[in-house]
Image (cartoon, rainbow over all chains, first blue to last red; front, top):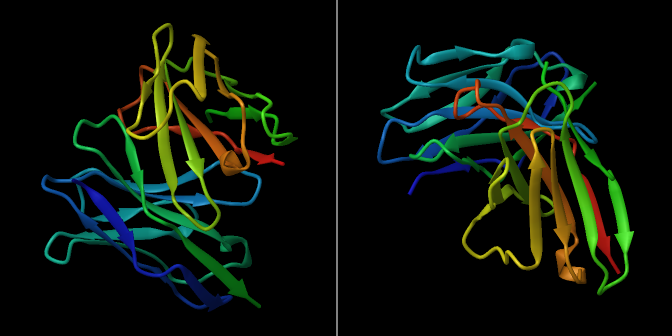
Length: 113
Length: 117
């Protein structure tokens, strides 16, 4: 069965420093992978998605992620954190039938000034 | 962009009562809607998938008689938690997709926090 594992439950960075949120996936087929962000009192927002095209995917708000098959990873990065990036981030894989999203446990990103 | 709303955003009820949560797609027709449950500091768990005009498909372990889902129109789905108990307290999130979107595209509502006393 397909799944995703977010390796850190909480990441703290200073404003202006790089962000790295780690995600490993497990899948018997070539997966479609996503990163979503959840701000308090707002709906989940899609940051970016990988669907077997370019392995380096650029998303909104300066985020990007690289699909590495050899490492079964799909880590989310951003060169310089902003205070507004503080939120909950979910790594997500779609099931083989393409009918359901499977969420990781989430990583809380804190950004200090 | 596509907007999904949920009502209410927060509800407190007594044990044994039923609570209805609405999910609306505001600017598109949602042929498919999804209901998720999120426990504190945990992942979203898919509860059920509903297609407009047909019965919902429930995930394993989700009691269909307890969590009644109705998707009577292309813009509205409702989740009714029947005879709620404290263990049903959770954050319930809906999402929606229209027929023109790719399979993986879902637009999420802001969630409804349910507290059962």
